[in-house]
Amino acid sequence: MKAAVIHGPGSIKYDTVDDPILKEKDDIILKVTSTAICGSDLHIYSGGFPQPRPMVLGHEFMGIVEETGSAVTHLKRGDRVVVPFPIACGNCFFCDHDSPGNCEHSNPEHYGPEGGIATEKGGALFGYTDLYGGYDGGQAQYVRVPYANYGPRIVPEDLSDEQVLFLTDIFPTGYTGVDWGEVKGGETVAIFGAGPVGIMAAKSAWLRGAAQVIIVDTLQYRLDKARVTTASTTILWNDGHKEVVEQIRALTKGRGADVCIDAVGFEPDRNLADRIKATVNFEKGSIKVLEACMSAVRRNGIVSVLGVYPVNYDNFPLGQFFDKGIVLKGGQAPAHKHIDKLLDYVVQGKVKLDDIITHRLPLSEISHGYEIFKKKEDNCVKVVLDPWK
Ligand code: NAD
Ligand code: ZN
Ligand code: ZN
Image 1: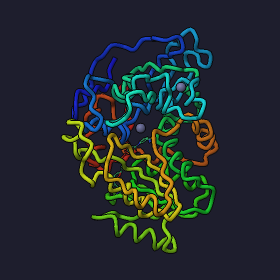
Image 2 (image 1 turned 60 degrees about the vertical axis):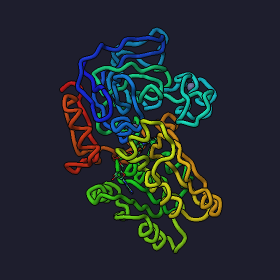
Image 3 (image 1 turned 90 degrees about the vertical axis):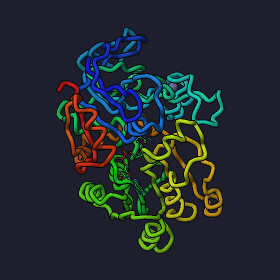
Image 4 (image 1 turned 45 degrees about the vertical axis):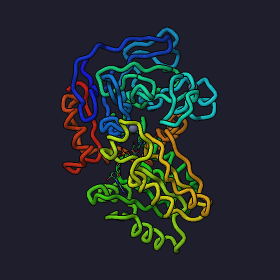
């Protein structure tokens, strides 16, 4: 089959690889009909998460069930499904606690970033390096989906792929930022990053009844897209974060936002050399968005960290965290927890997801897709790929 394979930082190729096969009784093989590139893929592409051997990337995909293992009870050949991005068993301590991103069975080898304790288990994703389980991903014509009785959700035939594809990751992820923020109605939510995740967080904030949604980005075209797709207030981040924080305070009676969401994370291309040497003491700028969130949130407010940070950092604003009594939450979004409710919102027409797509490419143009998405060229916001073209 054809697949997008990472060969090292900056090198993703349209390769011919072996077709996946069933390995466990509760696996399925999915014929992928649509797949997308995520900001999280950029952390691998730029070397933030080094991947030592070639691997098929991609954790945002959907398609048609091609083959089922003997223990698959929930699906049959021909079913059309979306697949949440964490690989989770549905049957361990963390899955029982609605935390599929920490599943103990899908990745028993996982040890966390440098400084993590070797016995910490858990956390697997499709196509997300050996650290996250070593599973091939769905930027391919076919993909093996483990634990198929737990992850995949059947989607209604009258909805197009593009209408439901983002239920795999970015919509549940954006929603998680707001859910961690305990938004019940009437709050101000400030979102850093007008990428796909930030925009989905804004859509989710409105769904949960926020009174005001503010989106911050360094790129005007991203803010324009955010405004059109979410009708939120936008702020352009020029240099330091002081100005941005002041503007957010001015919009919140001087108090700060009730909830700040970091939808940026580790910045691609920065500190790559440090990361490869596996040092942890890297330049302060790499968490400048998280620092801005901590400054812009009100006392006793909540900061949700959706942006991915692949390494530890030893200059964390602990004094501010304590002084303001900030609640900080982060991690892989528990997509399984929210996906059914979010699919209902799509079915009911309460939210539209496909308005962020700017590029539709054949899988053969994968390398171009990664480049424009990484470099933010050609007004790129979200790339969707057809594996059969
Ligand atoms: P993206 O690269 O398209 O978006 C990031 C945005 O942040 C861009 O628009 C960029 O211009 C903006 N940005 C950069 N520096 C900024 C700054 N100083 N202030 C404000 N904005 C700034 O990526 P995405 O697909 O939207 O993903 C965003 C983050 O979410 C990534 O780190 C990704 O890995 C992460 N993510 C996490 C989860 C999860 O489960 N926690 C799931 C999906 C994605
Ligand atoms: Zn993703
Ligand atoms: Zn589990």
